[in-house]
Length: 89
Image 1 (tube, rainbow, N blue to C red):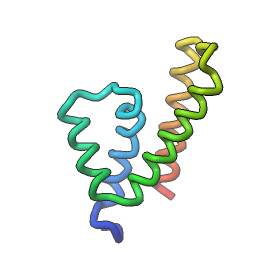
Image 2: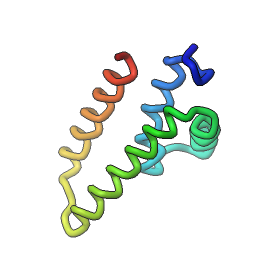
Image 3: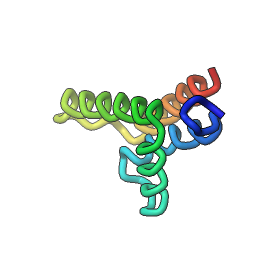
Image 4: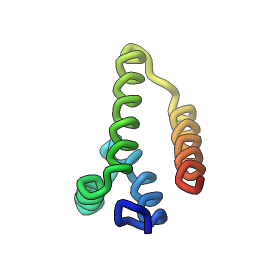
């Protein structure tokens, strides 16, 4: 258990889901679970806010361009790998 009452494994799972949550790629049950976790877990909420901010800045910067699907998929994989390394470290 971490100092905020959630196991590191739970938080790692939610941090992975946050990417999908931000992209509206979760069903309602998963969205509700993520919202509840974020309400209860300050460290995960901070990471969510950071990811949301980065996503918004990138969206504003690239509003007139669209990355190819293959690039978008590779970037998502890289983000997930970084999140896993962060949650394990």
